[in-house]
Image 1: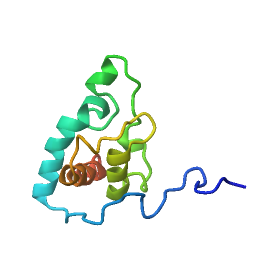
Image 2 (image 1 turned 30 degrees about the vertical axis):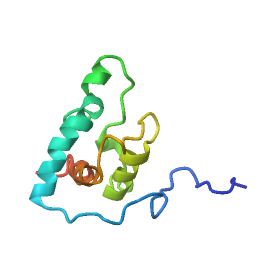
Image 3 (image 1 turned 135 degrees about the vertical axis):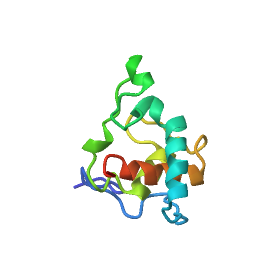
Image 4 (image 1 turned 180 degrees about the vertical axis):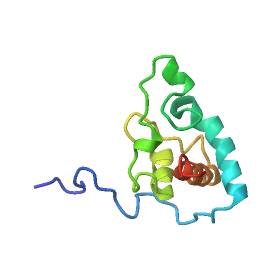
Length: 117
């Protein structure tokens, strides 16, 4: 029997704990903001294209998984915002550094990485 409050391996909780309900509508301006915020807050670890090959990885920090390897549930914007805010695996929580608007813009940008022509 699983301990109380846990989920089976590989499952994704819905709704995400602490998930915000103030998701903005995706727009060209939001995606542009997401690209800029991603470059500032995420690219040092995740790399410019999300391949897990950022500058800190090149200096010896363990590489995060490439975004292309994530399943659809992990690429959902609400899940990405949850990870930005609360951390996951080796990623530390970034809620104090990345505000709500930037979290959502980054999430929309990351959810589309590698899927746009």
